[in-house]
Image 1: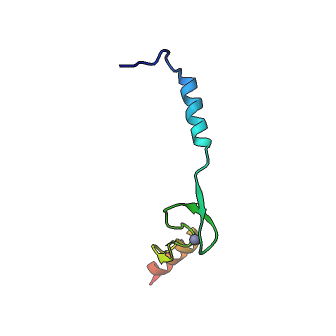
Image 2: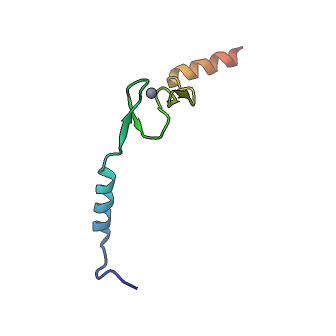
Image 3: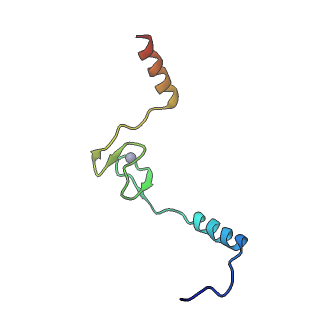
Length: 74
Ligand SMILES: [Zn+2]
């Protein structure tokens, strides 16, 4: 079985990992809201995938907290 001729140092390994992380992900554009999104994923902004609604996009955190407070008061 083939073996590496030299040990790869921790530093070299980490430099390579860092460079791999820098490579940008391939993005496409949402046809509904024109925002960048990962291909084959539902849009996180409008919650749609191929003109079908997959999920309701989350409102702002402050709005959600207010809604929860109102619901508890009732
Ligand atoms: Zn969208």
